[in-house]
Image (cartoon, rainbow, N blue to C red; front, top):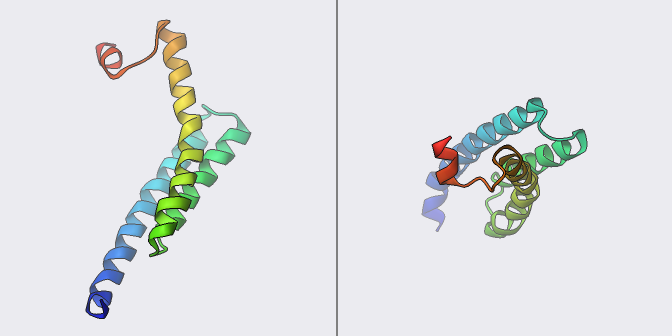
Amino acid sequence: AEALVPWFAPVHVAGALAYAIGTLAFASAIAHSGMLTRRVTRLVVAGLAITALARFVPVTAVHFYVQSAAAIVALWPLAAVIAARGIASTGRRATISTAAQG
């Protein structure tokens, strides 16, 4: 296990950094979109930031529990808005096949 540390640490940090950059860019886009209320936007951005920070911790439990919970907190409000807009615009639930048809 000790032989893997010099190889694992840079790969882990590079992966966490790439994930953080993408996640924080996504959080910025959500914050600037205006599709959520101010309070829900803060909740979503905080959840996404926590997922980004959790990637830097090399402990499996943090990835499984903290990151998963933060992702649920961040993504469920977005899913609810997307589902509600799909119903409002078409009168039916949006699915992949109906979204592709236009």
